[in-house]
Image 1: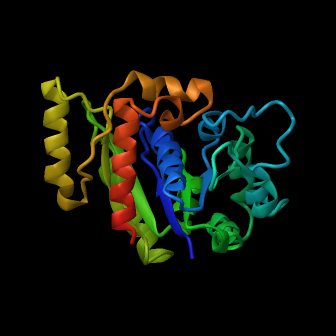
Image 2: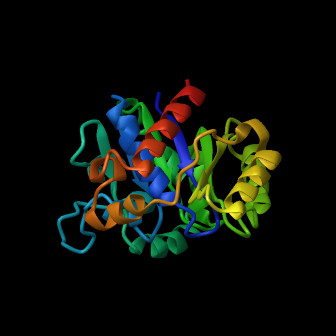
Image 3: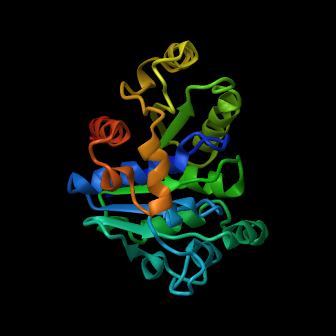
Length: 256
C-alpha cells in the first residue's frame, strides 16, 4: 500500500511545487517507486519535469481523471528518472473543479483514482493548489499525510492556522487517518536575522513536527524548473540538492 502525501500551503510562492518535485525525485533515487500527481491547475510540477503541456502529446491529464473520463493508470507517464512517474495537469483542471461541484462523490474522486493504482507504488506525492479549494479537500481526503512547506519570510505563518482548521475538519468528517507529516522551512537564508527568527517561530509553533532540514534560498533550486529537471539532476552538488536529499531521508524516517 502506497504512502500518500499531499503537499500544500494556501500561500503561493512558498516552494510547494519545488518540494513536491524534489521529494519525489529523491524518493525514487532511494529506490522507492514514486508517483507525483500534479493536482494544481498551474501545472508547474508537469512543466518542471520537462513536459510541454501544449504540444499535444499528453494522452490525458488529471482533468480527465477527476471528471471520470479516464482512469488514472491511463494518463500516468514515466519521467526520465527510474522509479519516478507523473500524472500531469494543465490549466483545464481549474474548469474541471467547477464541473465536479455538481457531481456525485465530488470530495473523494482523487482518493478513488489513487486507490486504483496505489498497489504499484511505494509513495504517491500530490502537489495541491495554493488555495483552500475543492481540489485541496480532495487531496487531503486522498492522503495519509499532509506536508506543509513554509517560507522563512515575513507573514510566513499567516493563513497556516486556517489551513490546519480545514485539515481538522477533513479528519473529523472524511479522513480520520490524515496526519500532519511536518513543516519544512523553505527559502531559508541563515545570513539574515529574519529567516532565523521566522524559523524559531515555526519551531515554537510546530515543535517536533518541524523538520530539522531547512531548504535554503538557492540559485540552482530556482533555475532547475526552467530546464525541466529536479535540482538533484541539475546540480547534485548544490546546497539546494543536498538539502532536499537530507529532507527526503527525514520524510522516509517519519513514514516508516
